[in-house]
Image (cartoon, rainbow, N blue to C red; front, side, top):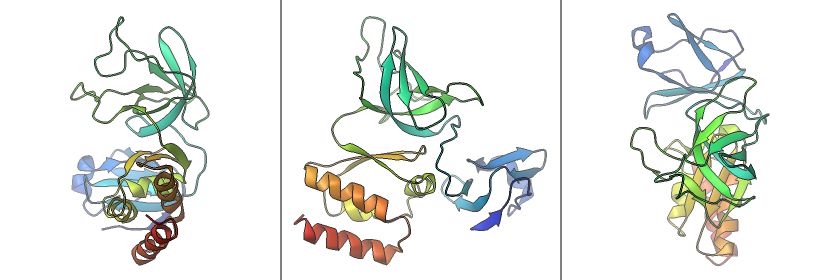
Length: 232
């Protein structure tokens, strides 16, 4: 299995079994052409065995929207048909007012400017505003998407957000074992965290941000120290 291989744009990324290339889930930075998979970004080839997902991990700061990716954003404008959502990309996302579970023309959410929402990108094209949705297209239900109340957003590197979605990343499990915690992870470099207390929320946000370059053991030590210092 290929792990942490450094690639440059245009290079062919070798996979364990080319015959299974169609079964791979390609994430940001990878593009399949005929039988080969090419890198379109410089960085490290990373693999998550859960779902056989592959992507390029790097330290880019500007988010490039990609269809299907979960995002955390803030309402910056509204019209009769759409909300405009800041997701940290070159263009804001459009969120239809009916793209919520159970929303109708007479019964739809009324989101104020500054409201934090969690959803996924239903469509994204270069040079155009991406469209966001808060309804799972397969189930027709919210499945965790929608307005996020309370808590706060912490900005992280996109590579850290990608790792947080990997169940092997220990920091979220370590925090959940010490305090009640709600987390929404966006692949646009934004993580929303909320706990029962402001102190717990701040602790969780700082721990997640500081965990990027720590080993599992170092993460455990950091969480213990933070909880002791803040008496949690």
